[in-house]
Image 1 (tube, one colour):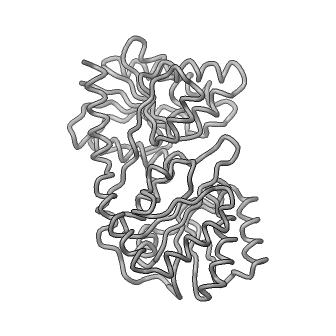
Image 2 (image 1 turned 120 degrees about the vertical axis):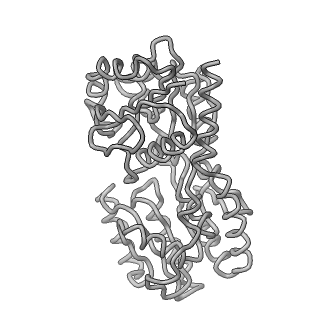
Length: 370
């Protein structure tokens, strides 16, 4: 069995890249023979044949599709001996569908982009719709993602293989090295509307009325949506939360792990914005692996990453500010319940590994080729 993979850059700097690299490394460990065609800006990967030919991934870029298709003949020659073609991210699906021809073809769907790409103006949307319809199946990272895709492409088969994590990363967390001044709420994700940063800030104003020394640490890019970041910073000033809510931006891995070790609760109120939604929410699982109770929202991929009332709490997106504040207060005021959720979360995270995801894919590959 020889698999051809179309992937994002093989780094850990953004969600698609982290997914591709982590899954490929897990497939390598299972002995899967593969040829990898990745975006031009990424690094090589030890032990894998990596060809950096694809354009970098901004799925809504006007001219992305022509760039994807431009090098398809060369990519096709590289993958001519592969038994199966797998587009690991949605924007590369047209190249994968064309190259696969009569061979089995899979696409991984990470969230909003199947729906958004098929709605692009003709002929772009038509080409993406054709490519996604060729997939058998579309592999979705969550049940919510699958539900949205089934509404968009009702005749295309789907299945769910959740994302994974590396629990060993969180096994021995630092116990110092960060400035914890009181009960701590941690949120990890880019500051943007879909991550609900503004709602989190507003909820912290309510939390502080009950727990005056509470602090909220937000780790993640401040550049993903600069205008929104300015709005969040202004809200922090308006609510007088300068000594409570801290936007740290990107931090070194050691600092992030130290905050996972220091925090008491993890909260990320993912919000559906138009047709965009949280496809899975890997940081919920990472927080569980760190032993934290986690809080997320209903009606998005967080429903697969959080076991409600077991590893954490899910709150409605409607009225989220008040519901989130109540959830945070309830866990900070009941450390025994929070600790029980943290213990359950650690156990849950041990089963949600990249090895488990890779084994599901290996079985899928074998079935497709049988």
